Amino acid sequence: MNLPVIKHLQPTPGHVVMMCGIAGSGKTTHAKALEAKGFVRLSVDEYLWEHFGRVGVDYPASRYERLQQVAEESNLRKLDALVRERVACVLDYSFWSRAQRMRYRRFVEARGGRVTLLYLQADPGVLRDRLRVRNRVREANAAFAVDRDMLNRFVAGFEAPGGDEEAIVVVQEPRQATAADDGAERGRPGAGGAASAGAMPRGKHAVVLPAMAALATFLASCRLFSGAPDNAGWLAFLDPRGAVDGLVFALAFGAGMPAMVATVVAVAVLGVLPVAVFLIVRRLLRRHGG
Image 1 (cartoon, rainbow, N blue to C red):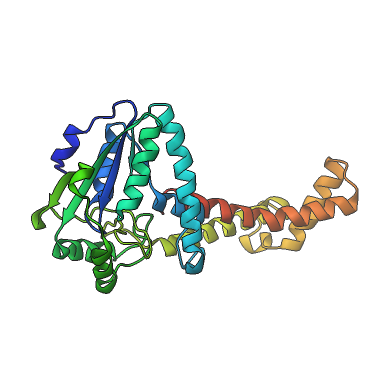
Image 2: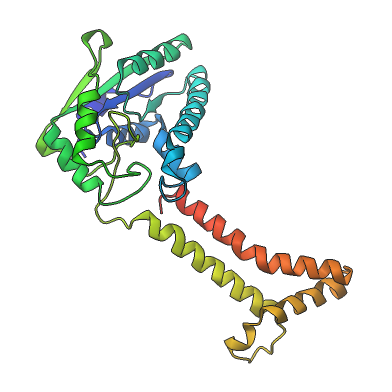
């Protein structure tokens, strides 16, 4: 993708680029291009996705604002350390309000950093086209749909940078609009997220694949400990009680455990192991956007 402005932004020590724009304006597209040049990218939306999952699926919408605050505080601590270490960063935020922009600018400059404000300006029609694509899927930067009414509220509430903020303005023309992602921030002007039209909605992966992994773990455990002959059919291995008895025998006579302790351990292993596999696979899918 041709992003001319990116060529002029270099990851020099202490350089912090603050993205600014409404949902669908291309903030994350530009932020990821900067990341590829060596900037460290910080995103509230990706923190929420990785640590808490999808709003309305993995946690109730009523917790969104509180978890968003947790994410922002965590990122602010990272930003503090990175600026002090003179590491170049890009903040993949909407920065819809002047007050927030000024607060972050003072925060960075007080630690010896230098701020560049990159404002992505786009016509509402361009934003609507972008969001129609983004709304088809759910992933880290598109946690929920942005409908026309919500977009209108974002546009009405957005505080465009003034001349004293010395922003670099990038005008997004209709022909430049892409399906690339932006950060989504529920209920805040400037929210917006990313999506590729062919991606599978995360909700299906988040349950089906972990459940299949857990079932496979359970079946493998039954086969391993049931004591059925190797030439027996699969149905002979589907005996949870036989698997518990086999594992108790192994623990009691092989490891020298008391029979009662061996029984408790065997039940715990066969019951907890599939659950643990389910949770681990689900967390991995969250982390990698599956």
